[in-house]
Image 1 (cartoon, rainbow, N blue to C red):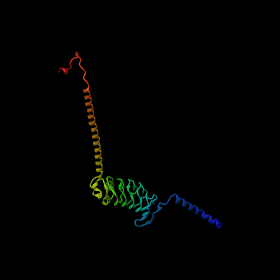
Image 2 (spheres, one colour):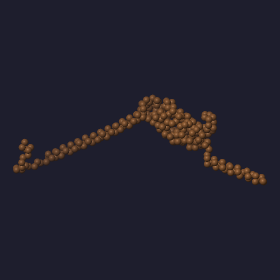
Image 3 (cartoon, rainbow, N blue to C red):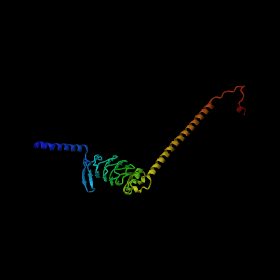
Image 4 (cartoon, helix red, strand yellow):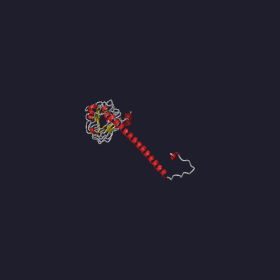
Length: 261
């Protein structure tokens, strides 16, 4: 066998193997592929495993191609305005999620779906969150940080905080920027000793009562107007009849009973 034949016999299988590896890499991307603008590294600190850091990356949305084996995800100090439902679906190893110092305004029911079993810490502090769905944190076992947000204290927030695993710690640092109760504005959420959900029901009942009273008053007013208008028409008709000249009585016409009397 010549050197050329020997080289070809060895290089052709190697080329085929290399092509196969390239095709596999293109068709099945690595679970640890790092998103654009982020730094990914396997480390022992602060958590053992894949740490993905996207801090100060001017992100306006959550990256869609996050590695599935991420244990720590730093998305703080960006311009993220929303957390779509199931945005972290598939990140079953995620233990810490930092979304602090962003522009998030509200949270839906499924914002953290898929993280119920693994997540230990969720940082949502220093955002613009005004309201959340009442079940946004229900199944999470994580410690949730929600301070320094312009909260509107209502029934949904009361239910959401009540469903947290560490609800007292979270609620202790929540200040009501606005509230269903005016005297609660600017005060800590824990100072609310009223069931805001029942308050909402009572407010609805009062509104319905006022509406019904308004309709009733309008119907009564119409009836009174209708009766008075008919009385006025009847009076005018009677005056008209009285103003008509009376018919002269014939000599042979019998007298009326009222005339005899």
